[in-house]
Length: 257
Image (cartoon, rainbow, N blue to C red; front, side, top):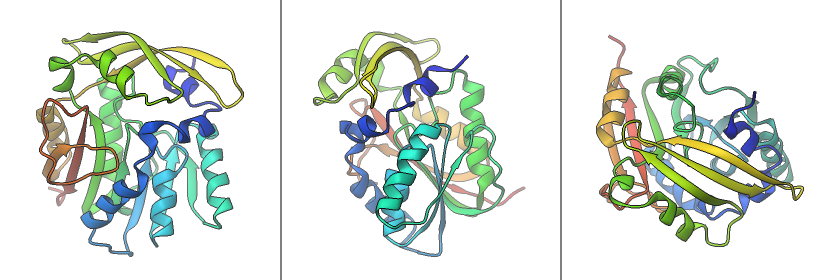
């Protein structure tokens, strides 16, 4: 049986690219470039690349990028977009919980909940972090965003999502946030690229900063910095607060002990 996140992204590439939360790509890539000091020798792994928006932008800027995603439908859209721009990008269908890479990349990115926090168990989410760590070389960087567990303690997730759709395709209802598991359950309604309406029972994990720090340090990341994630305007100056729906995490892999 397919999980909700597998069904969600089937035949959803065109609609996905029009969602408000996908419109900050260039600014987000500006931040990523600064973090690696514009070093074009860096090999980049884009985990949960979706329709390839970050992979494509970074390739246009001169980087060697490998994009992986679980959804063949999303990958097909990514390949079409890359082909239209005469870009050669290695897009692969891979499960982020079981990646084949070992000590191969200087940078891994995972933006806009690319795989992480969508999985049905904490153990599966941790496997994604493990595989990202394994794929990185010593000294490599890991830049990703995830849902901020501090936000729903002070705010209604339902009201936030309703206010931030901005005319997008997806709508959210019947949100319930479980403070014991830090999971938000909701009914998500979308229309796919063929006009088919889908109603999905979604389940996403929110994380507090101390959890993320502990998980990454257990995987031998020796520095972990966490900021507020502003759409299209990532910055180390954005101090994380309870007002931020997402966290921006920047970690550096240490030497193996």
